[in-house]
Length: 220
Image 1: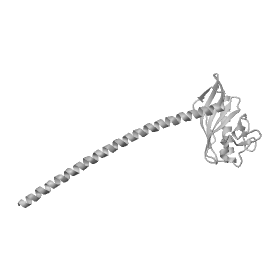
Image 2 (image 1 turned 30 degrees about the horizontal axis):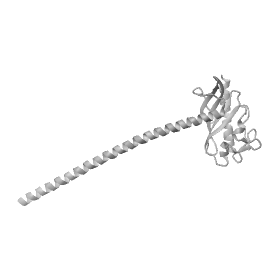
Image 3 (image 1 turned 45 degrees about the vertical axis):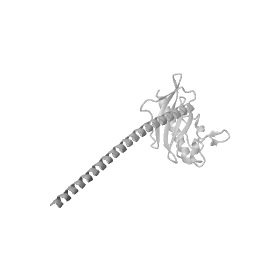
Image 4 (image 1 turned 60 degrees about the horizontal axis):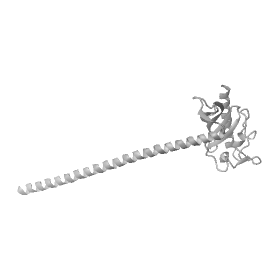
């Protein structure tokens, strides 16, 4: 009987020690889990601050680039403000107007700048088009594209000339053109060599922007 009681006491003591060890291990694991959770939370908060800060820097940079591009279109422009809300829609499913700005000098509107995107050979192509109140193109600037280097990408090149004698770039040939012009490749528009699709895409985009500006000026 004493032997049995002794074994029971030993067993109970061993069980208590195991339970104590298990409890301690669980506490240690909970502490570790809590520490890891706090580290993870701190990391997330840090990343959020970095992301927000980066997004702000990117947004500021994009705004600065846009203002510089607008100034290229209208060198004598003083104020660039968004056109009235709801203005600017295209019936062409391949083309989207992104943003429209009225350009003023000395309190008088002198033109309109329109950012638009269209499906080109390599994907979306985005350009900024300046149109004066005389309904003539002031300048065209390619903002982004995915066309083939050495071919369609020449649309944005400052060193590729469609007319070498006058050093006229592809987009440079649009300057001075009237909204009433056809804007047709191989007619009044010189195509980029071996890049007819890109050439037509840009020509269509410029023509649509010119028509939008003309419609707005006619209603004023």
